[in-house]
Image (cartoon, rainbow, N blue to C red; front, side, top):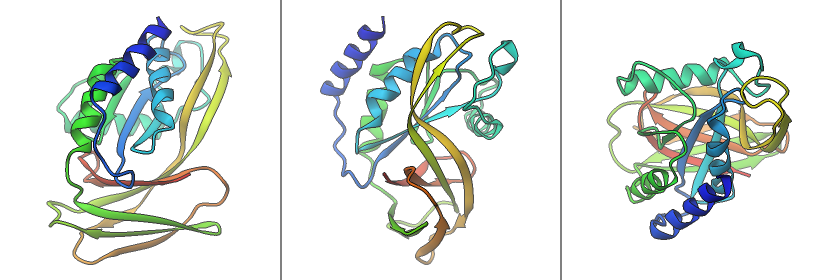
Length: 232
């Protein structure tokens, strides 16, 4: 089944390759859990996205599956809170795994490679409202941005790090007995502030170590993502 999903996803990408500059990537957030038996197929799809330059693929492990007998070591209540914010913004009453949110706007339930590919292509065709650049300076990252159009509302400046690959032997819960690999596991998500776009943005943020760094500029708490950039 896993090989079928990955093969189908590859076909979908061939049909709908996004036309986009590599400095304006589309953000795909996967809300997942090691305690969820439906999640490994979505985790595998995220692996297929992880090396692409035109996509920033992020695995946000949530904590609300931990009660069934296996505590996900990558889970964070902050990830659950962010998923709830998306649900509230989309007037959805429940949250679930696996769920993918594309560019802060399109939610995809489960492992659906064709829908995911179509969503990535759709958002890649949209003109960027912000020019965003990152530069590593020792243990700091300089974040610079300028508005290319009048922002409809202030943008929240998010920064996070991720580990490109992690492996876990799962001993309990719905995935007991499996050894699973995870791509781009998010950690250290933080909000650096807000920006109204009237003047250029310049922030120097601490980012010690070699982990990749991602910056997202997003409308409100859980609105459309207007710009994103990554330092690998």
